[in-house]
Image (cartoon, rainbow, N blue to C red; front, side, top):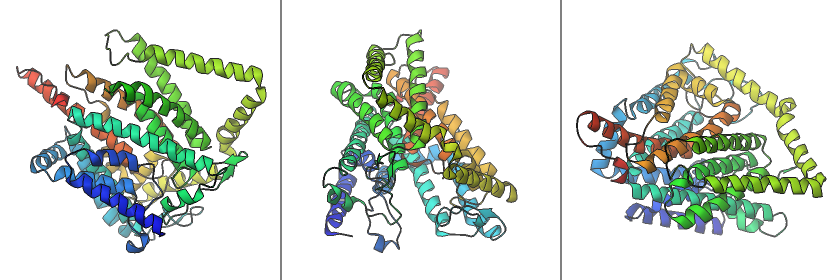
Length: 480
C-alpha cells in the first residue's frame, strides 16, 4: 500500500467514525458514495490475509451496527425478522443458507463436481470446503442484515429523502470515476486513480475493445462498472419522482441519467448492453402505464411530458446523425452486433453455459440440498441460488422476492406508493440480466436497499390496513 492509499484509508475511517457518532445520516450518504469504489481496500490486505474488504461492505456493516445499537429499533427489527408476514421468510432463507454452507461441502466433499468461485474456471473441480464458503456466506449475511436495517431506517420520510439524495451522490461518483478513467487514456491521470486500486484480486483496467479502452471507473473490470451504471440508472430514473428537492430532481438527476447511459455504453460489456435495452423497454412500459393511469396522481405523472419530448429529441438527433454521417451509426450497429448478437458464438459464452450446467448437475447430485454458499459458480442467478442454497433455500428466497414485490403502501401515502412502484420497475432489468450473468446468490448492497425500501413502506401499509379493518384510523407510517 502506497502512502497516498494509506492517507485515503485513514480518511475513509475518519468519516466512518464521524458517521457512527453523528446524529446526521452521514453513513447513509457514505453507503451510496462508497459503491463505485469497487477496487479499493479500506483495510490493508496484509492485515486480512489477502482478503479485500471493500468500502461498500464496510459502510453497510457500520450502518447495520449503528441502526441496531438503539434498543427499541433492534427489538422492532428482531420482531420483524421472526414474523413470516414481515421479514421472517428472509430470516428462514438465511438460516437454511447457513446450515447448507456449514455441512454440505463436508458431507459431499470429493463426490460432486463444481466450478470454484476462484481459481481455474474452465474445468469442473471436486467439491471441498474453502474460504470462499465463509466469505460468500458473510457477504450474504451482511446483505440480509442490511435489509433489516433499511426496513427500520427508511420508515422515516426524512431519511428516505436522505437515501434518495445519497443515491444521486453515488450516481455522480460513478460518472466522475468513469470520466477520469476514460480521460486517463489521453491525460496523465493514472497516478490519480492508482491509489484507489488496492484490491488483491485481478484488476482488468487496461483492456481495449472495438478500437478503444473499456471504461472501468474504479471497479475491477468493465462488466462490473457497466453493471454499476445500469443499476444506478434504474434506481435513479424510477425513484427520482419521489425526490422533493426540485433542483436535485429536475436538474441533477436527469443529467446523471444521461451520463450513466453514456458510461454504461463505454464499458463495452455485452451484459450491460442487454441491460440497457431492457431498461429502455421497461421505461417505455412504465411511461405508458402512467400515461393511461385512470386515477390522477401528480407524483406518478410527474415528468410525463418532459420524458416524451426528451425521447423525441433523442430520436431526431439519431436521424440527423444518420443523415449527416451514416458511418457513425454503422459503427454503433457493428458494436452491438459484435458484443450482443455474436456473443453466443464466443468462448466465454460457451464457458458460462458450462458453469450453469455443472452447477445444475451439482444440485441434482446433492439430492437438492445444494453445495453451500460460495460452493459453485454459475452464470444464472436462479441456478446459482438453488445450487448454492439448495431447493429449500432457493424457494424461500424467491418466496421473499415475490412477497416484497407484493407489498403495498398505506392508504394516503402517495409518496410511498410511487416509491414502491418505482422499485418494482427498477428490479426488472437487473433480475432478467441476472438470468444470464448472475454468478453468486448474494443480492448485494443495492438489492438490500430495494428490499429494505419495499419493506419499510410496505410494512407501514400492512399495519395501516389492519388498523382500518379493525375500525381504527388509517395511519401512513412513512411520515413518522
